Image: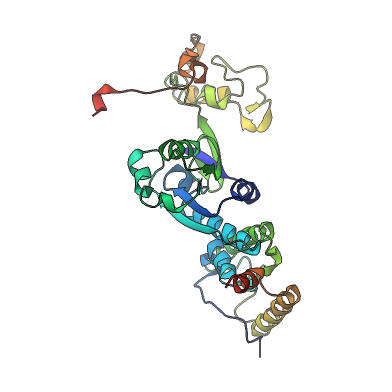
Length: 114
Length: 222
């Protein structure tokens, strides 16, 4: 089972730990896309962590859209821990989506400014 | 607490777009509790603005500081040594904090980052409702602890009016009739006789009708 090599995985105890600030800072540092992968809705071990994560991703999407970075660069996915192939499929899907969108404009702007 | 709501980022961008060194100034009190202007919201706004200006090809310095309060001299003094590094401040405090900041740093442009809404409570996370209009002459002792000034659309002192229907106000079914709440509460307190007392004409001079207000206490002044 393989997934695109330029995806950087950041482990968190639950997607409920993912904050809108984490997502924005990732883009500020040059990430081309960010996606959170949580447990299936209704199956969160902490009851509502993945539902909170979805709201935060949506909040980040709205901010990214407003400032011209593109809201679709942030996404939320749900799958269960036994779905390895689905994980790889999501990674490939996200990788393709971001490649179609092109690099994060912030990364380009930073290079230009340097 | 004072309840505020976030301003749209587009509106803030429009206000500050001519500036190059901007301080985003949060407040640790009410606006932190209502998730509009605390350290977290300062971080989100600053990050979004940094990316926006960078994307516009502009090198804008955007720093983040959150003070304990912006409505007291001693906390606003904490930025005295750094304020000269900026050419504008976006204050995420309530309107009180924004104004006190502007008074204290007379030549520094200060822009509001939130809309100050009312004095209210947290019903549940993400839902805040009004409870007080600071009329300066509290009548809660007579109304079972429920305020007709802030919770009745007409602010009537001997209600309810004819628009009260099945416990709701005529302006919106979602809004409880304050006078129905008062009657229910007086009943629960076994004080329904109090409802029969006609409330005297209220002295509104302590409300906004009397102009900007002031509380002065010599006993605590230094």
